[in-house]
Image 1 (cartoon, each protein chain N blue to C red):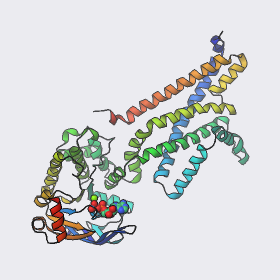
Image 2 (tube, chains in turn green, purple):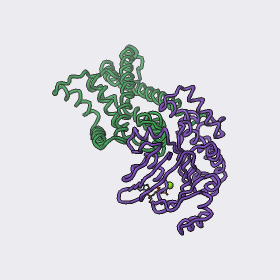
Image 3 (tube, rainbow over the protein chains, first blue to last red):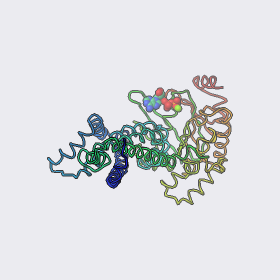
Length: 220
Length: 242
Ligand SMILES: Nc1ncnc2c1ncn2[C@@H]1O[C@H](COP(=O)(O)OP(=O)(O)O)[C@@H](O)[C@H]1O
Ligand SMILES: [Mg+2]
């Protein structure tokens, strides 16, 4: 027999956990994509030194486990005097992680913009910053939008790991509830469904934003 | 007074000597057609004039100001030198109107209303007023190229550089673009165009410059030079084109 009703008394726990996960997801998605955009721009158009720095960052993050990155920030950094709350450490770790993966994705988008577009902007008198923001970014993001969406969702799902440093996110709540009432099946099933709902919601939000940003593809 | 002046310009790509001492003087109101075989340095010449490429020796001035590739300079230059490319290079995510209004708004800092009025006037001039709200990908190649011309004109350039701007078009669309150029020539705008359209060069152009192996091989009044070429190379080239 399954007893989903046993979870009802913990609905507050789940709700506040959901809020934590959503907050972290929204914040780190925005910050991570901004970080990735800056790094991808440096990687594609920057000087040698800048490109080197970005490469090292990207490779470092992409070739180490997320949980180690998280532990390093939370348990390791205090050794050099940087004390962070679990929430802060998670926020930073997730942002840095998404930043690295999205750098690679966004750079591919930038690389897809023809030299002709950039030269056209230049001969019209646009400076480099104007060229980036007005001419390059939108078509570049359009090219890689599905991949970027997926990466953001992967990072959101990967955030389950932050329960390990006792951030009270969805996974933390699931662990807590099943340890109290021993309803592991129900508890994890509900949690899985909540993550699924979040994924769908995030994809929906990305699609809605994409429809606005890339309206030129469908209109008149 | 000369509007564009090149003095002994040398350009190298690495070891590759592409422009070998170009002397050229273009006065306001001239329509100069640059002809020559592929690889003779025609595009490079145009790109040096508007600062897209660096040259290693000699000097180029536009409207009395020296051309360098330093970014600031390129942008100042952009105000007096317009350029149109073979592949249109319209910005795909902007409407036709937005394409034309972009630089006047953010470079010349015109008000939106003023920029829009200019954009509409320029589109009217190229016969595309009704396409103001369309996106470039909905237009034919000939229409896109006319928008590119309107976009360049909106910056009120003193000279317009055109690099084979009809070469990517289907034959039946070439005429509409040439007609716009002819109209501009009549209005007195200074045009420097790399072209394979010999009829256009003869009938509309005032001067023909024949490039060969990185040099100005032969030049002169368009009707004279095309009906009576002096050098064997130009004779041969015209034999191949006509
Ligand atoms: N970016 C470049 N790097 C190296 N060589 C180039 C580059 N652009 C053009 N060239 C070379 O310079 C020469 C002149 O090219 P170009 O000016 O494009 O000739 P045209 O426009 O007359 O066909 C050619 O031999 C071409 O291969
Ligand atoms: Mg060329």
